[in-house]
Length: 346
Image (cartoon, rainbow, N blue to C red):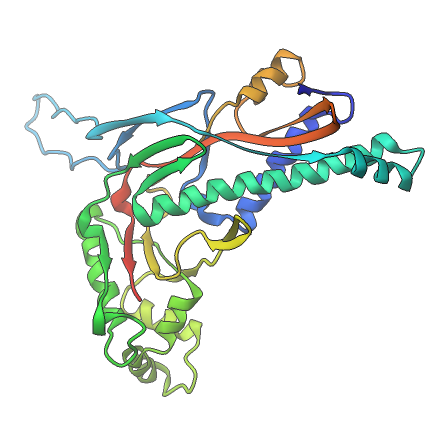
């Protein structure tokens, strides 16, 4: 199987799949807002854990004495490899001939159109796998990869006090006995005690949100604010939470397909606190693929564009087939895992 360059401009095709990734992260795979992409020209990441923004307070000193010396923050260094993530799809003999029969004068254009359509689908599949990794990092505080011979475990070290599981009468599905506002206030206080700042957003599923809307204690609080609503709205719920100084809810129900089955990126029973913008939770490192090195070696890609998702077109001759592949090396890494707090609520 060999790379080919005569059907589509592979540099344009790579720009296309990177645009697809950006569009998906803007509109569907939105966990990138918490673990944003950072391109690196490497296949390894090296970060300092615990490097929070604020130093310890400065000291008052006497005139003509030396200033106290600050220390570099970060208690340990985290490093590892970025795994390759890729998917390809085949345009075979029969499909190519059928496309040609639709427009006998435009065989090359028909193939080019098929390649772009396949590149779109492959880029979406690769972006979906990255989103799954982000979700796993956020709700487990770790990554456990055991896939196609790749075994990799990364424990980001989230404190045990930042993960809780409700049981029995405290479950949010127990509408008459649970007290979600009390739960959220307790968890928020733990978060503040650890980090010195409040969480900015509470990530929640529609199912967990509906449990809140049906909760007896929340409905009682809402009635004291705006009368006794027959149906509690999401807006009124957020008003209740705001009155207690709790963060707004952000509903996230994104699913991806795994072996043909729609699968949630974050399980529906998880509620996650995430930090304000600017607090260094972590990043999704995007490295350099072997495919991009091949393209650069063939003068099909600039050295400045090596890191990031890449698309290539390959060809076989027995049988004749054209393959379109999207590939990336990527991994989300949390450098301050205690800037998250996760609860299993029902």
